[in-house]
Image 1: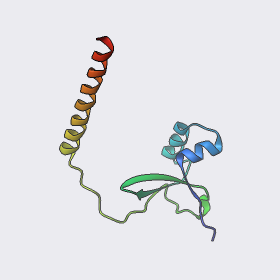
Image 2 (image 1 turned 120 degrees about the vertical axis):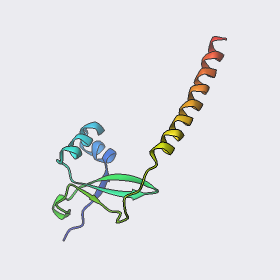
Image 3 (image 1 turned 180 degrees about the vertical axis):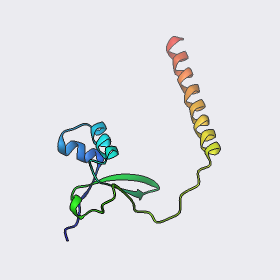
Image 4 (image 1 turned 180 degrees about the horizontal axis):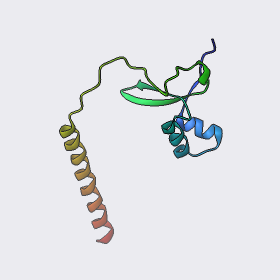
Length: 99
């Protein structure tokens, strides 16, 4: 059995001289087999370069843990706080340029 090669969406796009958007569309349509792995707390999507050795599913979850519960209110508040900080910095920069 051959081992399949996994490459990132960006590397696949560069290797085949197509846009990253096109690669993402192909993965969403099921044209390209993908594997999702968790690395450093982030989910990274890889494209399987040897689809004959891959599992028949389009997307395979490598982490066997239970689904992570997301506190949407907490995440919204964190994003809103970051937005307000950036808005304040932007306003200060505009004032500096005008004044």
